[in-house]
Length: 317
Length: 317
Image 1 (tube, each protein chain N blue to C red):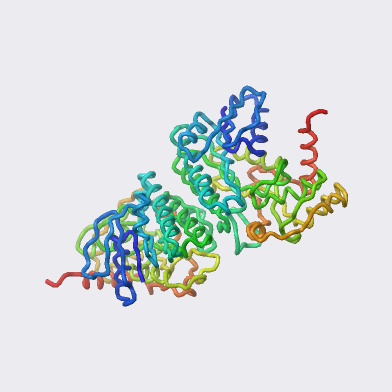
Image 2 (cartoon, chains in turn blue, brown):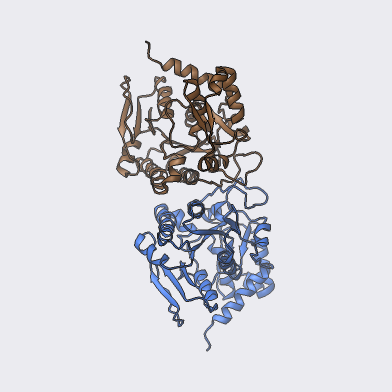
């Protein structure tokens, strides 16, 4: 079995690759990215520098793949600041990849990583798989358009698409990025390593979160679902947990002490706050759970996962 | 005031132009179409042969316009049969026109003619402006993508967009076209002129219909709404009437006699039936009515409108 992952240089892409490489039936994992990807000792891993806005690059990514995971995207903050690059990468890039998958004629399973950012006010109390999308960011609009493309390419039989709407993933390792939600990981990650971090929103704001572990498990699960499992609804809101910023900070304090929590500074950023507060935080994910997608037990487990993963990743000294 | 209408050679475009030309403040009505447009005696009418898949043509359409009505589209039957041409015209063409409007810097009012075809099963009992789209045709998917583009270009301040989701328009004059819904007009129009017509669906099928008069009035009304009227929901399901095929035939019989109704032949067409029966027929249009959009009084009035309009259009003999 051959896997292709766009955004393969990213954190979720790398974790997803690791999960498939643990499976003996996987012959090849292609990691495509516009940036360099750290090398792997596993001979089944292939790296490809690919800008999906170029149809030829998209063709090289899709070639021979049984499962395609399309994770690559211009993130929310950047897509809002640079409308044109968001349109090119998030719409044209997705369309090029779908066209390449169609041209291959193998009808690959195509997992599209969408986002809670497709939703926006006026929001119902609880989001279901039947709630209308109403994006309040260009990123959300572009993801919603990608969802429609994947659904129609699937209906036409060109790919077997599965659209997974991810919660905000927390705690992401590494450095802050241009996502409007970057702070959600930052206010945990930086204090844990002794650094200050800025919280740009009010502490009453509710968020809808998933651990990286659950997000990766659920992306893989979306690919494993037998054809037809999703019926007429190709799109699934992945499970998450609802937590306020205040509850996140309390959990940090319980697990790492008041000095860690004291490293968070509060400075409202209207641009970030506007985007993030347009996202929903309460979902009915009964359908997803019934389909076998997994759910984190609570916010403290997200922090503990992060600490454990960091320790595991630390080179032996 | 200057108006631009794409699909200006079409029936709704021509009617819409006529409505604006009756307004003394209108300086110019540009009718853009890929096909030839019948000439007009009114010096304010400008014709433009324009294929919107060419950005330069889109720029010529948008130039200087205060109101842009984007009616041009590859219709449902054709978009299903030829996926690529539907994608090019319905997505790329719409995007080119939005880009042209943005580049002009005048923030024109941009009325996008969308369709009930954005909806599909599983359908709720009644569609509202908050029902999730789930297209079951490429035309519907492309219209849903156009809606998202118009909404995001509006949110960014590039255009002032208004999305009007049209019911199936009946009775259209002229000849059958490649829309899956072409028969909806055909089973009234052809029998009235003494010709046979084929009904490709069962008579129990419910449809959601608008007269051409109401559709044109409502497209114009969408443009006249003062900025901000639509709030966070740029998209409005236009009013229509719910009617079964059997009720349509009964009305035809009441108005034109049993010999007219007897000219309808029944021959199921699975491709047409599949698309048309995926569309909803029951809507709550309270919001649209509250915004001043108009509604037909009933199906017989659609037939009477058609007969009256045909008589008015007939050259004196």
